Amino acid sequence: MKSPKGFGRTEADLVTEKFPAPLYAQTVLNTNFEDAKRYFLAALLEIHYAHTLMLQRQGIISTQDAQACLRALDALDLNKIRSACYDGSCEDLFFYIEQRLAEIIDPDIAGKMHTARSRNDIDLTLYRLCLRAEVLKIAEAMVDARSALLALAEQHVESLMPAYTHTQPAQPTTFGHYLMAAVEFLGRDFKRLRAAWSTINRSPVGACAITTTGFPIDRNYTAELLGFEGLQINSYGAIAAVDYVTEAASAIAVCMVNLGKLVQDLQQWCTAEFNFLRLRDAYVQTSSIMPQKRNPVSLEHTRILASKAFSQAQAVLTCTHNTPFGDIVDSEDDLQPLVFAMFEDAHRALRLFAGVIRNCEVNREHMARKAHEGFLTVTELADTLVRKENLSFRLSHRLVQAAVAATGTYDRERLIENLQRLAPEIAGGPLKTPVELLQQALDPKHFINIRSIIGGPAPKTVLEEIRNAKRETEEMVAWVAGKTEQQSAYRERLQRAKNQLVEQV
Image 1 (cartoon, rainbow, N blue to C red):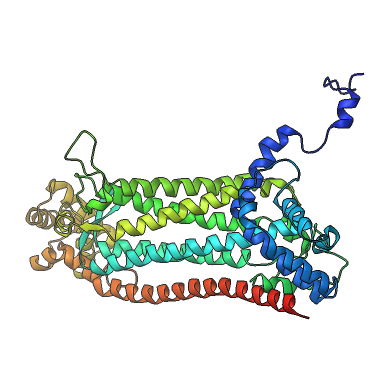
Image 2 (image 1 turned 120 degrees about the vertical axis):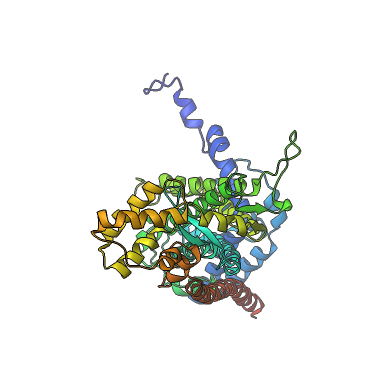
């Protein structure tokens, strides 16, 4: 008899079907089992320990049963678990571990560990446990990259170079001033990542399936054992909300965009046409056919790694976009490896970038020559006329623009002559400003030094920025160290609590 749905299966076929279907096991469960072993095994066991300790402390399970469960967890052969192949006998790593525990102690006792919890809150908890570790790795790499930029900036507070707008030479600046802009954006990137940490490090344990439990659990105690800084309070949101991961992905995406823009400049400046930067031999490759080649591939690798991490961050946001606000697999097993890949490539990009920055040579003389070419200083010439001739800036701008057009190819003396010649016609009278002051206005060093307000390129201003940035960096280092210590401390605290209960007579 055919199925009423017309799929060619008999009623007997439907009766004998069991979960999981071989195809489902091959395409979903096998891959997820391998991912879970790789990423989440340690976190899953920590949750088991912490939840069992809480159940005993609250009198929900007996001390004797809790001790048996903890000893069984200790007895698990982790190497055997890591090497296990998915065979379809269980759905996932959680049930696989449950099976192994049932082989060590009475299954009914092992089953008591699952009182007042669900795979839902377990999953969200282990995702957060692992994600916060990735955030700390990225934060440390950000600080290192920022420190490398800061050290290079300090060496070049007086190194003249052209600043570019719309990819064209615009005004003189210094290489130190340019680099401090990157130091600043990495500081903002760090703050975004730090905010993501605060969102991530909230415990969903106790939310259970989505509405908590009728058992008198202590969510705060479990959170403390697992090193969380507080609770993800609303149980529905603890299971349904995905901003714990999308905020982190957004922080990574912004950082990679920032990094990519900087690397694009540096890559261009390594060209023979620019000749501003030269990477040391350890960071370049030669050609298999052209013996003269020095290819700055380390910057290319940095750029593609940043682009990959950015794309993966976008993919994380896309995968979670327009999914139901509830428990849904879209943000679970198949998404999480993408999150790890995003962090891995971002980490590689930042580490490689820091190495490149510490191993680049700056062609100060050539950069300075380029800062003296063209008409890069004529903004200051217009400003000088405003100060000395009492002209409006618009009129001064028009006069200088006419002098530039009349001069053609840059020549300081001819520019000043044309400025003086055109002044009666455009400004309504001859210039009174001494030639020496007009010449000074066209000096790139003067241009830099007079721009000494906050944020400007004057060496004394940039040095003050560097001093402030060093203090900020010290605070960043202390934050990372403090959170890293916090992560070590919770594991020690969990171990002590477990040992005390196991050894209790």
